Length: 136
Length: 109
Image (cartoon, rainbow over the protein chains, first blue to last red):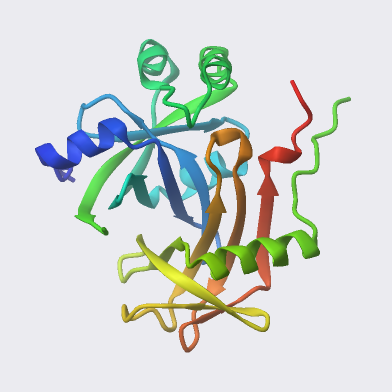
């Protein structure tokens, strides 16, 4: 699948948006979801992290089809795509610049997240975008 | 052996939280499963009708597997969320399969 590209306005939005909601399929094909802190490195994908042992990680590894709603200010961006686990070797150099603080996430919280990513307790997923539209 | 702190809302806390969000007219995030099995996301207002949440708007959602996330939090550390999973019938989703948490219940440190 060729990922759908974000346009310039969407990229600028995603560079600022930290709040998001991630939705995925459970085994019985019902949906579940989580509030998430969005990560962005302007390489065409949104990213997020979670504990490697979490239910969330297991859900995404079993069925990668996801929906993401990113929020910032008055705007909201709706994305669908496929979640891919990023190899730890590739992910480690990305972490320090991806985990941001802007008042929503404290510096202490961000540092703790980076540490747990580097230790491998947390893992990184990217979303290969299938569709994108402004919800608001 | 460490034990995880219980971050769940009590039934009373959950009801109070939902009533506050509804009263303030806050939008909530939701997703419905599309024909290809992807969660198609959106924002809508909700109303409480007994033990159901009614979704506003005119997007066709009936019969679809759905998830609604009612969430508030000025910072990551004070996020409170109620997550409702189920199937939408007549624009309503039952408050049967619900998880909730409040990061504010985490012990300091």
